[in-house]
Amino acid sequence: MRVFRSGFSVLVCGFVVGSHAAQAGTVDASYSISLAGLTIGRASLSGVVENSSYKINVSAALTGLIGVFTQGSGSGSAQGGLGNALPLSNGFSVTASNGSLTRTIQIGASSGNVRGVTIEPPIELPMEGRIPLRAQHRQGVLDPISALVMPVRNGNPLDKSNCERRLPVFDGTQRFDIVLTFSGIRNVQSEAGYSGPVLVCTARYVPVAGHRPERRAIKFMVENRNIDTWLAPVNGGKTLMPYRISVRTMIGTSVIEARRFQAAPN
Image (cartoon, rainbow, N blue to C red; front, side):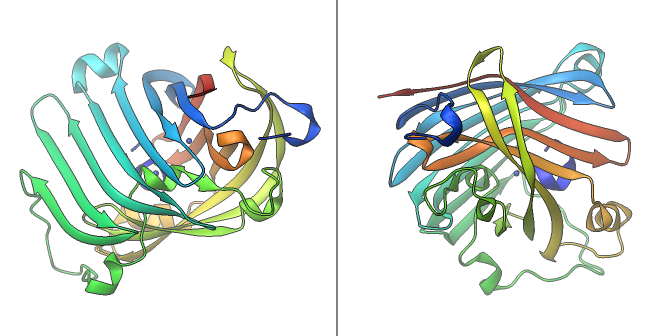
């Protein structure tokens, strides 16, 4: 999904200020996808987030005229454990299609350490000018879906420290960091489900390895200061997940925003 890197593609118990956070259990959300103000697709996120583990499924599809021409769609899943600061990835799989080609990427991992990567069909990557991926770039990392699950710090989902973190992401071909910084707090009201405050974080894309620094798209994203995510509470306020993600791309601003954001106890 690579939400932060590509523009689409990296989503309380007694929650402060009296909103209606759900207890540990299932999460079920649907999102609209827009580009330059025009709705171009839809996405969904579902799964289970508990005190020590998570399992998340995501899917997305382009709709309207863009969908007719590109037939873009994808789905993926990830699972793992919840550490004090970051998720501990235990496996990731994503399949994406553009109508003419379908590709699957699978990452085998244990507690955030990558054991193997399978890409089918293989991606032919030009090696000239590419920063090589090394063994250390596959250790202590998050897959792109696990990066959507953020354990709460200091027992308060609105504490700005929940934004002040660096997410080490490995997507199967590249290793990059997403650096989050506190921006503020907003109130939201979905069409169904969650209503209340969300934590707003700005984000920066920092490539580490597997990329070509001279590529125009890489330079654009490195210099991009128009990326943010709004985080809403799940798991009884012990975990945050994206309610909204906004990324300026080279063809306009892409926004993924919840229309329905529901959680329920098991």
